[in-house]
Length: 68
Image (cartoon, rainbow, N blue to C red; front, side):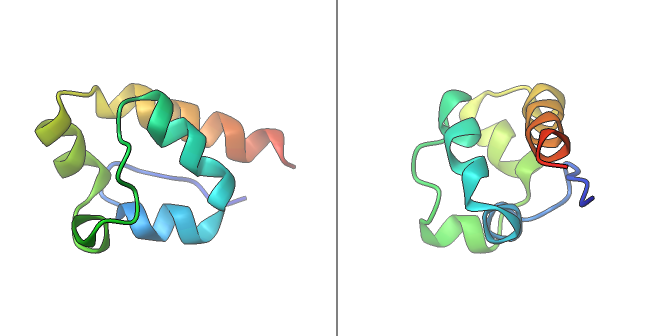
């Protein structure tokens, strides 16, 4: 199983499983395929949007593990 971490690029997580998009949106990240997503880590994007990166990463990993 793939495991997401705060240093991963947003686009890499979305390419890993597009089903992660609703999780990003639930946490307040709505422009997932904008140019910044190709260069920003989850941690950096969370800082810009005022989001707790550890909660987002936990939710992403919970989703991915539920698919096993």
